[in-house]
Length: 450
Image (cartoon, rainbow, N blue to C red; front, side, top):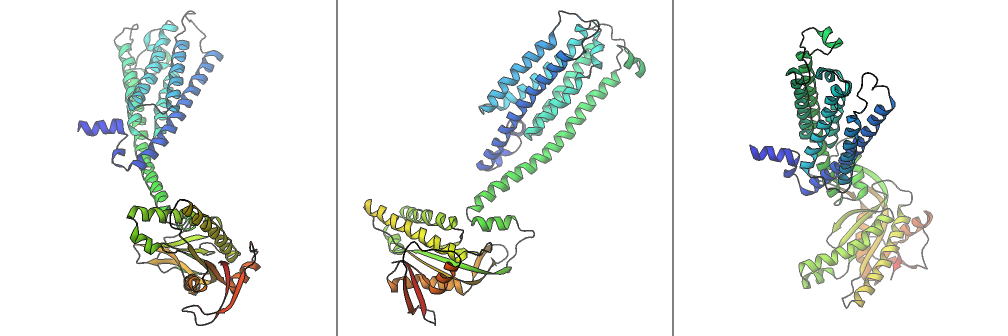
């Protein structure tokens, strides 16, 4: 029981059970909240100081040499500045938060207590001052951290503070208590109506309870939102950004079997000799080579407007104009192909300079109409492209070996890309009437990289 209470008081209520990345996100949010609280408190000091210095509240029988308000505001201002500095430095431990609450309430109650001394009135005089209303602001401030524990602690401290002030009046230590049961007399004199002060304490506690309940519910939503946000960020690494955006923006739940016709361009790339290399290297080295290859190729495809449809071992299947329709899909795909092949040549040079065996990238681009949609068994879904253009691109990539080339496309795709604004970086070799395995008709080949 004590352990659970300790965890609730100093861990914020259950965050220890969350993954570290989620706890870190919540900590960052709370650190920003502490900075906001610090600035608000400093603004309160400035505003209250302005009220005391710029209004006629102090008129009446006043001890001229009595200036506790100014002293309290100076002390509180210094505490706020220190707290703000620590918040910016991210060095506010849990115990300092509780100490800050105690300081807030103690200074406020001390200020209220001073009124009967300042105005030379019985202690019951301070029970009527409107300064008590600031206690609700101090309680509400703690809600900015989305932690009910601090709201509850603030409310309890405020209730205890006001109960002590009432007790001080009732014992007659600050002058005759002059207790009454007449509400009018209470309101128009320095009489004490215990029931009225109990009402104030009850109001403080009920406000605290309602606010704590609201914050507890809000914190539950915050934790869930942070958890889902962290999970979404993690999962988005497994999806193409365009597909992830499509999933997030879907008006209804996505189900298997949904599809749309798209005129697209397909780019497929393959790492030559990787299968043999994977049997010769340790597993971690194999994965590092694969990561290096994909880390060079995928950003170039994305930069040209492509979406990575899937990784097939060392193969990459990308689509242009599938996730979102594009009037320049073929042109974008060829621009991506040019960038990838330039990067491939640089990679080969780097590996040779490092004394490592060079690895070539084979690539092909095709175009056509495909079906883009979700496939799966209902529990696990995957967005993909299905159609002749996808199969044709795979066959073209394999045909690189027959042509002794590194990257090719078909004549129809190349002509379409030119109509869409594509301009080749240099002359392209054309090889008409080629027989591509698995394709019944002859194909006009355009060499993108020999």
